[in-house]
Image (tube, rainbow, N blue to C red; front, side, top):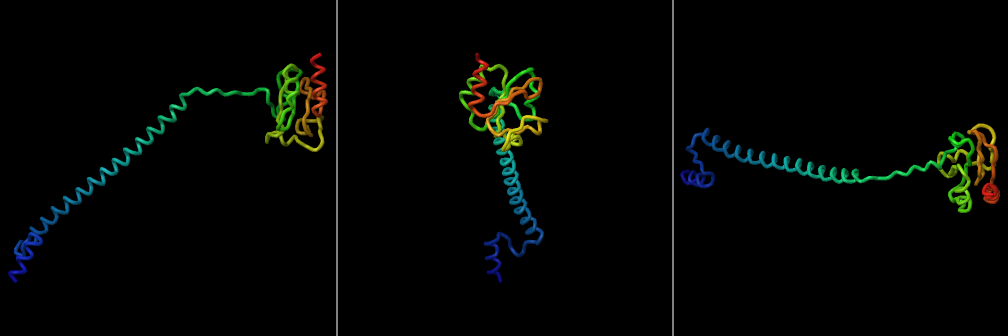
Length: 178
């Protein structure tokens, strides 16, 4: 048996003759050191992770703030109107040019010299309710319908004349120039 005791001393550093408390105390001390080391490593990892999140957030916010500092110009086109408010414009007499997708370049040019005028894009979602197979320019604003390219003459909030098609619109606008 003495040989086994010597082998035990070499492997563990404890002898069988040591009291149990001493072995446990020594074991607890070793476990506490390894557990406290693990705790410190975990704590450092958590702190490093939080620091990385803060750094990424700070860099991201700085880039966004840099973009916000750049002045941007917003162009509001007051010459565009919707069907619902085309009769409510300020001038007493004005023109409303209703068109689909492509505007006629000649009409656009003639409108620059035609006085107060507004454009109505019939392809916009808000204006599609006014597109129909046949035109109607009488009644309430809900009853007004456009077949295609149209020029309306509006006086005191009422449609007084309507010209449909590029040829009729061009003739009318040319007559205004004379």
